[in-house]
Length: 182
Image 1 (cartoon, helix red, strand yellow):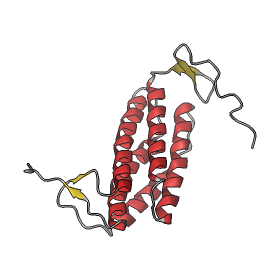
Image 2 (cartoon, helix red, strand yellow):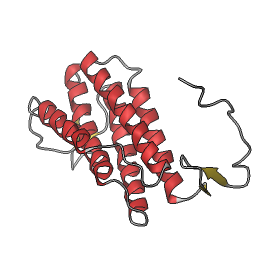
Image 3 (cartoon, helix red, strand yellow):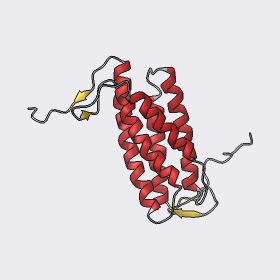
């Protein structure tokens, strides 16, 4: 593989603009850059989750998701570029269905917490929701791959289910919301 990052700083952004993957430039506060930052933050949070002791199957899945998020960032940084496919969305749906079938039905809302790994997963879920907002805001001005929009929506659902799966694996109870706690 050729060296892609031969120069770490370029000084090109010193005046408030940044380069996109297609060579164009945009403001650092543009909706596109905000969406890219949110995707990067989500990917970093998943990386933090991967520092925890998790089953190999979950580690592999999260690693694939990190690569998909990097691909999603590529789509956002190169307007018109599409790499996330319908299959990627369907795969998330299958994983959600598979994991959810082994969990007890919910009768109450769950508060973020339980084990440390599950708490990290809940944090990733909330970052994913904000990422989804940023991408949909960008989509309102500049069309984004419909499968990418579906993917980020399913990912937040998966992260919710996965937090419960992780707590179950670690033999830690989910934290249930209580309306009248004092």
